[in-house]
Image 1: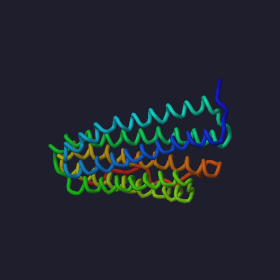
Image 2 (image 1 turned 180 degrees about the vertical axis):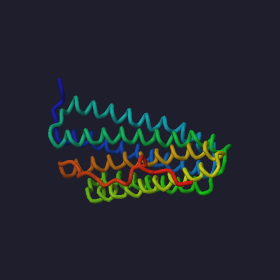
Image 3 (image 1 turned 120 degrees about the vertical axis):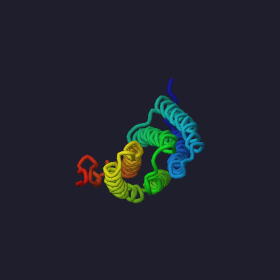
Image 4 (image 1 turned 45 degrees about the vertical axis):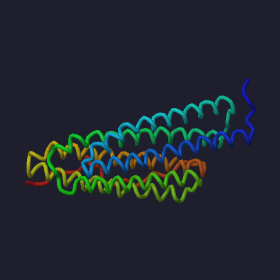
Length: 236
């Protein structure tokens, strides 16, 4: 027989889930920054650490989902309470996917370490990753305080991530056209830039969930930067 949905019991269990999301988010933020550092410094050992540590992120998501299922089954939350539970479960899934993108970045380090050096590429990608990492930190802070204003600020910053991606795409296309020996490295960098852009999208999804929980209505459609699908090749 299900336990009654008491306010005290529900709040205590939900707080444990929120803390789990915050802790998981910290692991993901660290993965982003370490993967970008490994890329910039061609540090294969650090890249391997990022790949290995992804297991902890996966385990954290599993733990959160297990607690959510238990909460739904035993407490049977309704209305606003249910909205909170569903939102944090979605955030855990988004954090896990961001962790996967960081792991993918780290996996490319050994290949790039032995390939052509593209001046400024790794540093630019690290700056892009830092921006997403700060967005993630602020998104988690907005969740902790249910601050929709901070969540909206996070969402607006995603346009800058999109613009950085577009600029990097143009730069990498130029490098490939100038010297075919740059093609392999630049293709890897293109994938990394796109993955970082996708991380930013997932962070904004989390911020939208904060707004939904705090205000009870979905966030308004957000502005987006120009799509990389429309970037023309430079003229030769």
